[in-house]
Image (cartoon, rainbow, N blue to C red; front, side, top):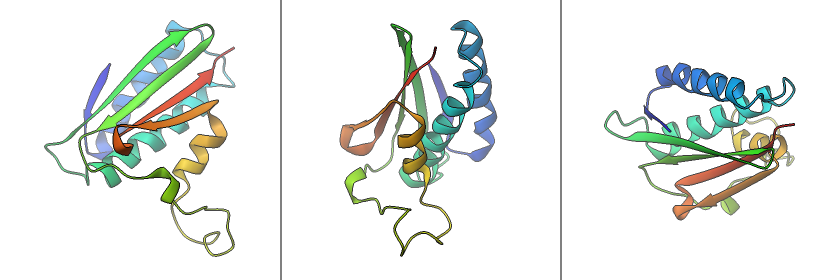
Length: 129
């Protein structure tokens, strides 16, 4: 498990965490970017929208490996949200807006995206071979 602060500077710790896991489980080179991008999006959402960049709030990233797939859970200490209320970034009224594509990216790069704990935790699952 990795616990980081709610500062963009902490993303470097996440990158090292993903690289270590990638080597340990021999994650294929074509899956590594999907995992890194998705986790970075999830952690950025947790930092900015969940913990509101509060220095005293942490983000926890855990993982589990089972049957050629790996799952990551990203949890924050801030307010939750309803993922069903997030605007579709591909709709005409949102296509030119800056931001708002993190959840869309995660859904397209992961095999499964699931929210729990009133939206304070997201689980991302990847087939890795």
